[in-house]
Amino acid sequence: MIVARNVFQAKYGRGGELVALLKELAQLAPEMNKHLKWTLTDLSGPFFTVVTEGEFASLEEWQRLTATIYAHPDFRAWFARMQELVDHGRREFYNVEG
Image (cartoon, rainbow, N blue to C red):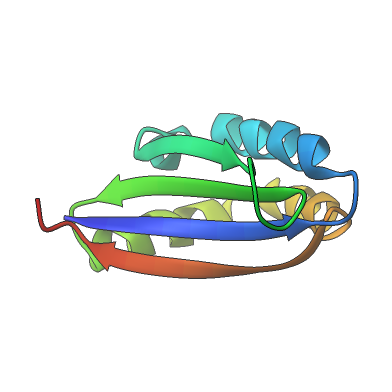
């Protein structure tokens, strides 16, 4: 089991918009959304940080589901809207040990 964490630094004042947009992605990709555990926003640290975390059986499963999302006909338009909201981000993978 792995956890995939996406950490986004939204542009100043746009964190709420990013959270709303991520909820839209859940509608585009319900097969990925069922793996999403939560969406988190900052309580401390850099302002307007948005984090998503999901659990997957393996890295291969995450890759397969990600490829499905990228191939969705509406993904390109959705991603263009996301680019307007995000300054930078990173992805982290963790093994679940317990």
